[in-house]
Image (cartoon, rainbow, N blue to C red):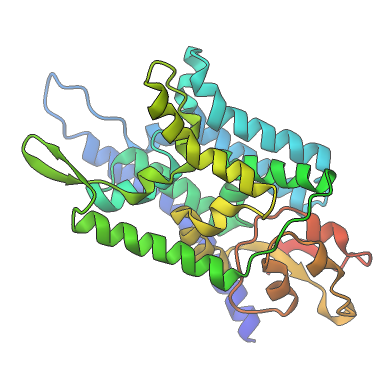
Length: 328
């Protein structure tokens, strides 16, 4: 009875989030329609949502969900989708082609969370947060696992590391979650106390700790900038790439505030990795094969799970086909 009620709650929450998008859009349109004469009104929530960047995110995530649920996802499709996400949302805006300028990660997912806390929720940030939360509520972590360019790059590297037979260490989730939370708390403290700051028009403006460890800055090539500035921007992404060969998704598990937020939301996601318990022999083959710490908790049917990025390794490792993506 309890599990049935939890399932109903998740379905209710999913439908509520789905219906909330047009409500937010209407509210934003009313807000935006009050601009004075002679001044161009700011784009509304719905207009932001209809931009190619967000539309393609929703399309890619929808395609991934269909492939996962129908068990049609394979490594070739997986690599193709991850490469498309890395190119569209990470590389393309740097090519100087007008069409791709709209795919730029400005604001980046990290800035969407952190800068909203510091400076308020602007419409681009509201739309981005809505898309991230919506896709996470559908699950399984569709944005972080398949759309995010930093996440997609780390997943590709993990697959390459498997091909090269590089031994990767599976970090303890309590450790990674503690580090991720401590970084976030440090960001709050340092920002709100203006320990990290700049001066604008004689006023102290707090800066974000994440500005110095944000791997998304590595996709901002800015060839005209000074070389040292480029190196500083690239360093978090370079370190992420290096460590991704030796542990699974280091930036996601250890640093990213979006990962911290979506880990909480994915606990009530509509679709997740589920196990047919009655026929399971508890051989642990899937736990060993999985690169993430989530599966050990999934097998135990724990109420709280570590981040699951729907990488499909666990579902493909069970010789009896007892793991699948479905409605929990």
